[in-house]
Length: 107
Image (cartoon, rainbow, N blue to C red; front, side, top):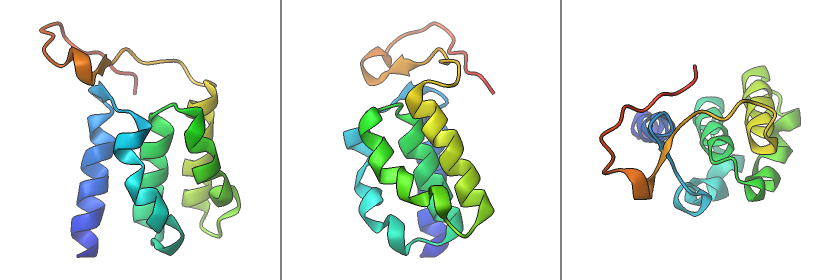
């Protein structure tokens, strides 16, 4: 079951390479964050940061001091995305999904 959860979280994270997803769509796993292992927690933090929604900040801030350095690093990256400290990639929104132009993302 853990591998299935990790795969789902990874797939949601990958969706951000092509679409901008709203926080309310990806927020439900946040309630389980305190009980997650490091890998699913990192995926969840990545997903919340990728929304670039300031309302996600309080959900990830408690993990800035997590014992796992990978979780702390992912939390820092997510916090930077939320505050706009990184360059905005060109994405489509869910409303733009019918577009035929190529989608470019930053890596």
